[in-house]
Length: 95
Picture 1 (tube, rainbow, N blue to C red):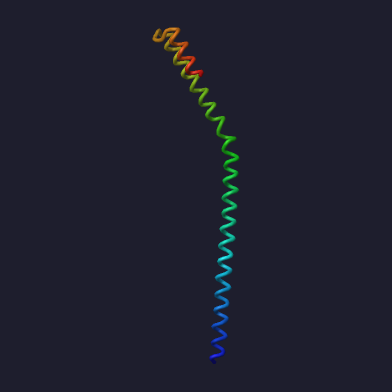
Picture 2 (picture 1 turned 90 degrees about the horizontal axis):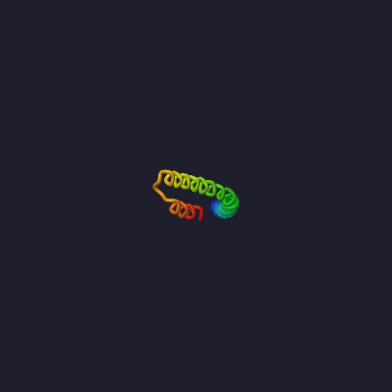
């Protein structure tokens, strides 16, 4: 009977070691795949972000400048600004 117990114990140790090694390999592979996926997603985000970003500020900037120029024109028409003041402010807005 002691020989049988020794054989069963040895088999259990070997099976446990094999399971531990297998789990460790699986975790490493999953970690590597996760890193690769994260890197790929980051590259895609970087590739898409610059293409979408520039048009929005340009449109907002143009609209803002037009609104400011209209307000200046109204102030000039009301007599609040002189022609020289209007021209100076217009140059500042248009850069």
